Length: 79
Image (cartoon, rainbow, N blue to C red; front, side, top):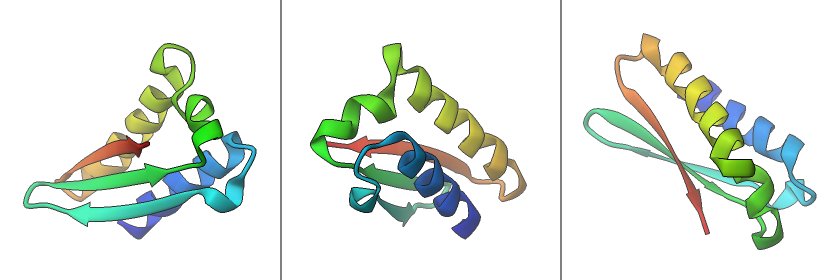
């Protein structure tokens, strides 16, 4: 779980203009880990990407990493 949190933080910091504003919180549920990503309001579009492609790619990476844990990994991009 820690490696997945670090991956989300690393990817988000590489995309945004204000990397110090990136925060990732993990909420563990019964069958899933929910990663809540918070970025600066001006950087929200950069993390989501055109038509959500960047966010979809991050979700794909998370789900492939979570296959070993037998729990789903969900990415919520907070406003």
